[in-house]
Image (cartoon, rainbow, N blue to C red):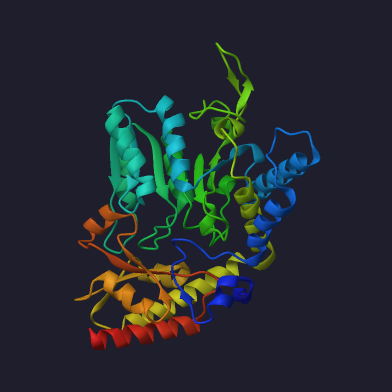
Length: 403
């Protein structure tokens, strides 16, 4: 059974009637995370790595401990974890470093129709620049990945990289990344996993997946904004050249020539987001102490099932994505209402203190495939409950009668 964690989140204490269903965009922050950031700035604020005075050494210890927590959380080695500003920067860094040196004209990159802009545009632009083929795996009628086409792409092309989302931020589809990785490696391709929508909702184990690259954002994981993680398998990372230069990543510097520290420090030029790293480490602590992923998965699936069943009563509503999969292990339900624009649905719900996302969710090409310009997305986390879903359905029914 899911532990009641809502009391730990000050936003919900300040706004008792708020129903927050936009967790795929960003999660709320527990008091523990907020306190860790305040504590750093009020008691330990100093730069890391450079100082030999005690405040700097304390800040460095807190910073390094956070990296260890995050590495353990995804079962990585600490020297495989680089801090970024988020998922988007992590993917761009892979494109600018590894891909630039390893993918050439007439090679191919595989993505899918369900990718977020963060995992589409960098590879689109890279393909244009390097004359690389961008192969796009379609989705099936049920909103799942077309695995036959994926395997055909791998076997019939010189694929160097597969860049794929773990869970679609639009459809809620959960891709079998272990299978996708196994297939990619059969043909010598590396794989990058966009785990932005999965890492807060299930145990992500980079060694079990055998991922070559994996990225996610802290703010979708109960942590601060502006901080993310780039995991690179050490066998790959140790040979990567940095793409940003400055303080903190230099091993030996001179006017004519300089050398760099090893990964991950080579990818962390300049002063890092120290407080945000510590805040993300605190978010990991909170999850480890309060959230059982099996219970969370059952809880979120129950909410999805209840919402899907409720919305299915209304003929004007079309639910997107693999419905049976969402009922079993989903945390996102996306839908459209015939005759009412998604923005108008969101605006109506907002009048009743219900927060949802409306638009193309940074996945405009997927909406074009679905012949839609926008959709309404409900996304859950462990602090949501059945009463909120019931109230949501009630307000949708009222809206359909009025509009």
